[in-house]
Image 1: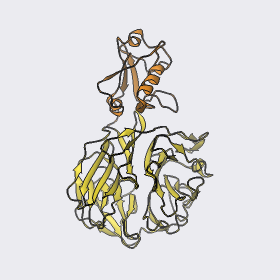
Image 2: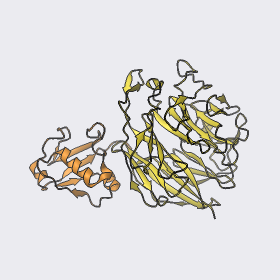
Image 3: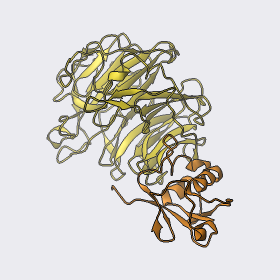
Length: 371
Length: 98
């Protein structure tokens, strides 16, 4: 029988949550790496027991951990992330030039074809690749040496490369997103890159339609339709049907289109999920009511999903990597909150229940469908 | 010589107990201790001294014989009682944040 494993990264450790295909009764592991921040964990689609984890700390820096048994045991991998060549500078908050400095790994994206190959999106924004199971890392420096890079500026959370999308149908294509530079695409396996932000409009930059400078919070793709991308920007929910070359706004009837997460249904490429957050100043749900919104039409028309979610006095946030879906026939949707709740919908969003209420603040969730 | 490590680093390197023993030849400096520590426990590489800047991480302090020696150069010799193992070198993680 199929089962689901959730890899949950939190402010104070990682947790592995498991359930059978009914997704009703869950087992929650003891904390892994207790006391450390786990920005992201993800498993290889080729070997689901091969997991990678980004473990970091303001005291002790960055670690990468690897598991070969589905998260039962872990071993440190390589933690040297050295920018290629002379790193140069990007813009700092005050407009001055600031040297590129490695701070942490925000996102790990295992290869779709090789369990030993994994990509890392880091702060200050750059993309690294390992082909030896995370032991050594080399920068794909064509991104950071892109002609626009000297003008990139950090968002409030730092200048992080937080989204990496691989395309099974086109192995040379990689889409990434950076706060607050925007989206970029490579069509030659990471050698060269171009900004793909046409159609974005951001009122907080001098030129709202600039080529770069947009605070993209997250991007999602359904693997069955790789040219269609969905974006949760700082404000605005967007879509592209040409792999990011052009974007159109699909916020439609959302009560607020600020937010962090966005994801697609595993089997319905036009079904999209977001969690609207009140505003950039107030990072919690509107009116204290936690609502996932679903569009079955690829955007514009959204329906609130509330059954089982708190509808009063709820003031948590849902961070950019904290939503995931499984690929069981009845697609499961999961998200975690800064209040430590992990919610599960085993029926595509119609009904929700909390797997747990009491984890540390959730930074990321990845669902693995097993068996 | 003996080095006492903060709990997070003992957990990271799977070190039982509070202290590790290192065997160094003179001169015994903080830099030499960190080199030996990283050689014996590769998981600790970069955790005490940033591998890019070569500097002590901001929230860590070094104590020896009840003195804070954090601001001494990394190549300064440690007190003889630390070098000969009578006293441990304490690597302390500053208590900050939540």
